[in-house]
Image: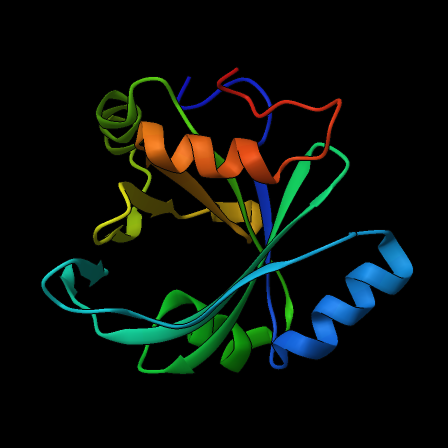
Length: 167
């Protein structure tokens, strides 16, 4: 099994971050958002289908109860996110897990013949990610490695009475 346990995150790719955040807040009860504008992922830290990638995104993070929601607005360059917008428009992009053994989960995916579509690191914050092809499901699956500092940041964001999967 590549990943088990609760899904940590659900992510939508959007064209307009502010409008998407308003809709999730007004219609689905997400009380607040943490927005990181214009995050650049450069070719020294990221790849798309095995080749260096260079792109910029704006990220919005919020919680609906104990479920982390992520919104990604592509801002420049070619990425899985911009490809999603071009191919199908805004919508659900991926579900993410934080496996205890990130490297082992990636190895299991490769052994099962699942393509790793993209990989990268969020430099300086202690996060690594890999997107797996969803095959007949359509959406991607993300595996994440989070540093203790990143886990603490997410723990500070989750509403009282809920816990992230690593707790």
